[in-house]
Image (cartoon, rainbow, N blue to C red):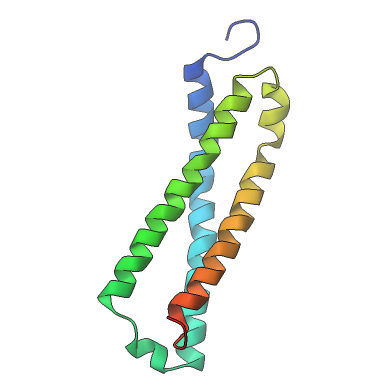
Length: 122
């Protein structure tokens, strides 16, 4: 660390350490939302079970991968802030970015899951 600023390598290591530990929580929350709506529509609309196909499961896989690609967007502001003179306050409050991103992803996942599993709309 030169002049109180981390090297690019140190900033990247810090970002990976921070964000990858939280990726499990992110994926867990999104999986719970998807499973909730899957079982909800399975109970309330038994015809939803017959509409489940390999294409829909493939679509779910693609959406899960895209959700994780979107999660990687957090690295951009994190690295930018860490390499600035605001590194110390940023490292204390970057959990706010995690929560905002988690809530946004949860809302999007909810809408997608409803459309995906609802027999009227899927």
